[in-house]
Image (cartoon, rainbow, N blue to C red):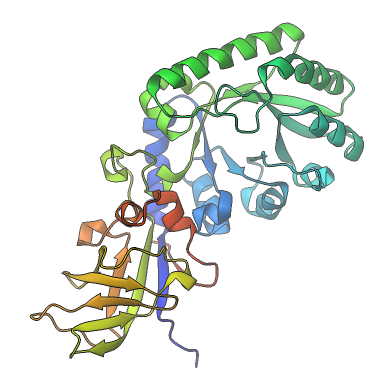
Length: 355
């Protein structure tokens, strides 16, 4: 008989599927939808999330690196997989075998691709920096990158499938300026002779606030997991439901101190908080958090509320029941919601809700 875990996360695949459908209708519109599954799908479990995203209507998946793309290929059918965090130590032939598209922003990447995959067959997305300074080609290097890509395309080494960029999402005005820079770079690439089938620059924020940035494909990230990328609106405000929730059991009760321990801590991926910050939910009662330790949390016990060993506590992720949200926990710990869900340790049990 196995040992009962003292903590776990629940991942609702139906909620995620509903979020994908909502993103398709409200963010992508007539454009295709690419769903980010980087960092083990923000801690949710990349295999289950990838399969659910594609069944729910996503057209393609974004990963960070080639190995992640190769690992996901058996679960992605023929869907497009895009990897853009490329290292000189990577084996580009792995991308060719797994049919992983590569985000290319430098001549060294084209040279490496030609050297390691001389037989061709890799589709690339050329990336221009439009102001974020996040691994795109600088404007002064763009023409040379496009010309070399065109030469390799004509010799059969690669296919330039897309041109793309990232937006900073710091303001609507900055996004508008970046979008104009992108269109200028696209015009330059086409004048050189490139004929990409896809243009993409928008993620959730720009697709929401700047619909003209949707172009041919919209990349949706953390909002599809029910966590807001905005400071001024929640995921609920955007129509997205939480997908992950964190839970633990009461492991000890100290009536004299009016406190209890619950079996989850920062060693399990729970972000630490300042002392006496935040709360968790037991039944419908808020229990104030006194501290987050390595393997447990200490919570205060109200005088009129009974707590027993083995009772279930929700830390975040079910705000409709009164629990905190991931955004609440992010606010308490001084970070963003992405980190709250992504930080949950691989070792913690993931319980997938499938229907």
